[in-house]
Length: 444
Image 1: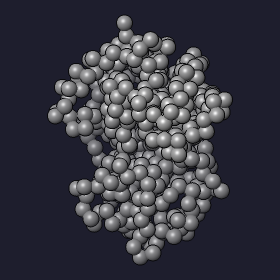
Image 2: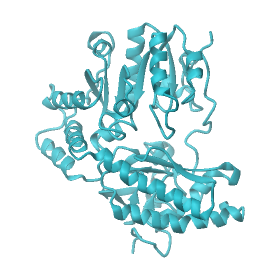
Image 3: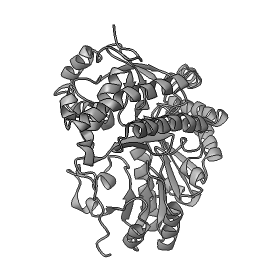
Image 4: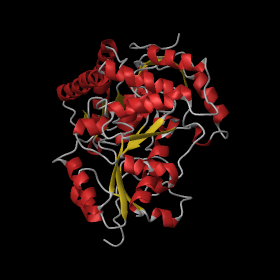
């Protein structure tokens, strides 16, 4: 029988996953379309590789094993899998058509709804992926200011202007690499020192797991104003999660442009660019940002239903309360076990479990926890991406699993043999180089 959400006697059988993996070998580069979903992010030999279906906050892999899911599609499932109100909206629109030869009313209806709930959303534009709209925002900023350079903080997608600052920058011309620079979160002086009269914009994730300190975001706003640069918020993770209106509402800081995706359509592919009308109007004639599928109606129907559910059911409050139970519960177990080398941090709607390198290899420790959670019916990649469908029972089971798993980690660390406890290959980092990307503009 396949494993379920319980304390299973053994690790799950993943024969069908492995068969699909073999068929993908040499056919799909890196095996995956989304790096965070790929086999390198899970303990190979133990974790499932292919998921077949989901309902609520649970998923079933191709071998029939069931798990509580804390990945949630790497963010988009704000309400949960097969959420009825969203699925009804998709099915209703599907009966009428998907993509048309002219504009669809939903383009207007969803834009009005976004304008209603997102601060500063004077105009609205759609696309399909997060990096579509971050790239469009950067292009708008360059067009509006007549400047070239970009200062960034966080992850903003695979397009040339951003990925040039990572170690996966082959294929990007040096001239492009020389236009984007990075700064550290909460380092306002580092940002100020990097601003010059050729910086078109500052783009950052308003928060990831670290909270802004000493009015950092307000100071970023002022620094941009003083330098004549536009401020862009990349709200892929904060949008419609921290608050209905995202980080601008939660932190009371207005960006010039804000970019959304993930949570807005509960799994359907949609991204949204919003912001000041005088900047956004450059999309009329001055810059080119048009896509065949920008007005695709199924995703817009999903977005409309999702935003209405998020608004009418105060979903962010539930995400905070359920996520807080897990974060506080994890840290309580850690304190009881006196294992100060791991902790759960971040905003309650999306938390991260970290491991201190002083105790051992962090990736091996993470892999051991992941391996043992999978045995107990919990699919986990180091994060708790909360959705509206995570029940009290899901939270209770997860904490019960941690109560069994963390003592195993403690024993392995004390024996200095974490790797020996692993039944497969440990997880890998997404980027080989993960820090010190910071480069200041050359004339500073």
